[in-house]
Length: 331
Ligand code: ADP
Ligand code: MG
Image (tube, rainbow, N blue to C red):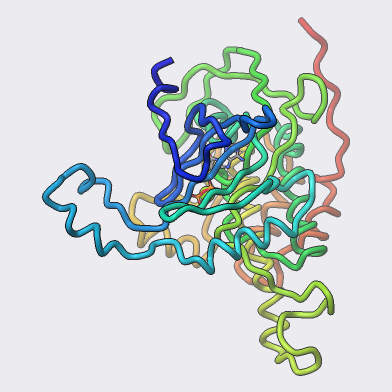
């Protein structure tokens, strides 16, 4: 394949054979790779240390400018991401196998999630059934519970791009769906909940680039000096966790109908809608979705963080504990 020939090579990453690009961000590229010495399949996140303006790249007369390129990824930030990931071990959290760096890059060798950002792809094509949405959000929620309650970590960047899937079992079916924000929807797939057999498999939380430790693991108290912690810090700890819960509400809403709860062409209008918590269960897309699911979303997309569900309240909600309806018999 041509794509394989074009894979870059990195000094310091000789033990890995990069196979294909799985994702990219402003300063990072993620590749599917094989560790040559062990044969293990992994994902390698390569983070640039320095600015490289894409539009200027290749223009030789600008090369002089790059000699003074500033650091874009603060060492302290990447070390925090690495340290937080190193301290986690949970089936719903992408594992960090190793970390290294060269002069120009940081390398994070991660557990490979072959399904990638499946959520995005599915939302593009169809919506999730309530059973499938429950499976996906519970996978994520167990990871969040672990982070919030066992590790004292707030993720702060929960969104579809950072939720990765193990498998892509697609059974083609025809059931075109039209969304309010997009004109055309293509052919559909049918996706099965569950981690075993033909199920969609595990869903894991990735990208700890913005995450933060909010309490001290040893003392089980908010970060800071024990006994001298101000009430606003104690509140801040609780409120900072609630940002993940809001994001979970946005994710769950999107899973169930295929479009996000807050959307506007204008960033100012969108910001205002979010600030007011202005969203609706738009008809006809929400007509057939259960009251229980809507009730749960209402408790997550709640502007007052003190009123918003915590992860334990989320997990205790009846919708999360409903037994999945039996699969329809094969036709
Ligand atoms: P950034 O900080 O640039 O957002 P991420 O860690 O979110 O970096 O990775 C960027 C993208 O790369 C993800 O959105 C996803 O598409 C892909 N990706 C990241 N980690 C993995 C992984 N372990 N397995 C498969 N794909 C991944
Ligand atoms: Mg990301």
